Image 1: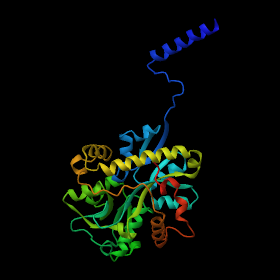
Image 2: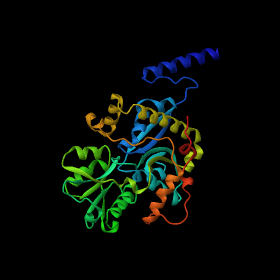
Image 3: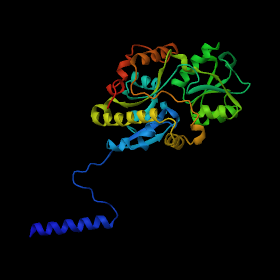
Length: 326
């Protein structure tokens, strides 16, 4: 009798769930693990958006909730506070946070800069505007955030082209607003990344006057995906799942950069016209970060008084960032 009553109660409960429009969860079925992620709507984050669109994260049992920010440095306070579990940020800001004891570690490679121009980032100006660091003294240079990699490499460009970096004013402007900032004379030049760099050149009224990305010899790490040591230690399997799915996005992006689906995905999150996406200069999407290259960036940071005291570049790299996860 008791067993009969239990069966009738279970049937009533199932009927109530279906009537409410909520599907019952099968026994043993696991809910996806939700990860909040801070990101930037620039071309560097294409593999992440690909992995979301193609269902690579879903296949790993992950649900990714993205929060766009103006720059990587802006996402790191949220990471430190536990408001997000992963942040896409530049290597300079990650190193600074790690040096301050915030426990940041790179878990996945993002993008790199350097090599012969054109590159994915350049200094733009109105035609007839300043073309060197010397001409820029006493004027304004727009960067997405101060004391990060854009600011650092912009200072190196000013120095290498005859100017004093300390005689230039650095104005914080989000990437999507940089073209308007230069056009509207809020800044004489701007260090801007694609897709906004290509859009500026295509406007016809602006030109690229410098390529700051050779501040570090050879291709240098630009931005990566970071988490905290505490979260990594508590969730090593989740980190591996994230990196595995992300790396699939890297593979797909590298193999399908000219496809219609690629254009649709990139245009969707950058809000750029599909025809313009086809002509973008693309960064090398990579799966690992070279510790020696990070050490070179650390050297440029020391040169610009961003870092002092001992710092081991390897300490900021979690194993999933240095060895491919498959």
